[in-house]
Amino acid sequence: MAPTQTPEDRLGDTTGQIVLAATPIGNLADASQRLKDLLATADIVAAEDTRRAHHLAQGLGVRITGKVVSHHEHNERESTPELLAAARGGAVVAVVTDAGMPLVSDPGYRLVSTAAAEGVDVTCAPGPSAVTTALALSGLPTDRFAFEGFLPRKEGERVRLLTELARDARTLVFFESPHRLAASLASLRDAFGADRPACVARELSKLHEEVARGSLAHLVQWANSKEIRGEIVIVTAGTVAEPDTDTAGQVADVEVLVASGTRLKEAVNTVAAARGVPKRGLYEAVLAARA
Image 1 (cartoon, rainbow, N blue to C red):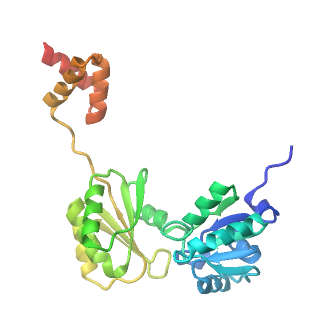
Image 2 (image 1 turned 180 degrees about the vertical axis):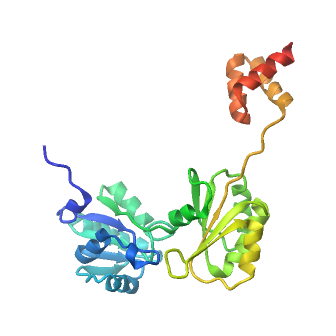
Image 3 (image 1 turned 180 degrees about the horizontal axis):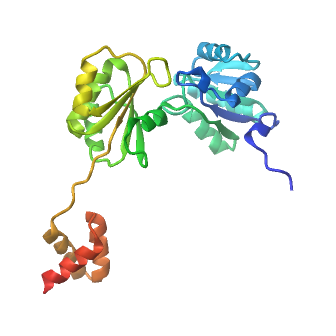
């Protein structure tokens, strides 16, 4: 049996491959050796900004030997077939964005989804990500979280989205631009409540990195008190569900199910799960109500 190939082994494989390569989000020292090797050896470097790709390589002391082509949100439809054809023809195609992981609020989704559908080999050279870096630094729960990208610019759309998210129990991560930060924090405060814990991370991994933590009300004041520059990530805590204390209503829901033919134990389990209450306590409450 032939040994299993690693992604590194396949870099020289004639079958070709698309490699999504994470780039530093600020500090060049965060660049992986694999990223450096890819920039130096890939047949094609598909870059969100070709000038920045060359600047990155120069900063890393790497000489790009392959062809550098543009691959961004405005030409992704046209460039995707060309990159897929190159990979099918045996080329290693390294996909890089200006900072962080491709596809995360950056180009690449069309390329990867099409490659997956057509059986073109795709792998990833993981590395820096502003989403997980800000989440780790926020001091907020990390066991469940959702990345929501950039908030809508139009106030009405932003309010509608945040109204939907206000009841989400997961920690939420957003990107935002400096000049819209104060307005977005105010919208978050109005939708989520002034006391909701949150964090604003600015210029992550760079010389002037700053992490501000506190309630949304505090962060609104903070954002309005100074000139904000750099790349911004907002992290907010999820909502904490209020305990359901309507025992009479819980019992009534159980009895409705029982009346429809559901066994008592099953009815209790169903209502307890829906209401977020202990099954044993609800079962005892039903028996007490029947006594």
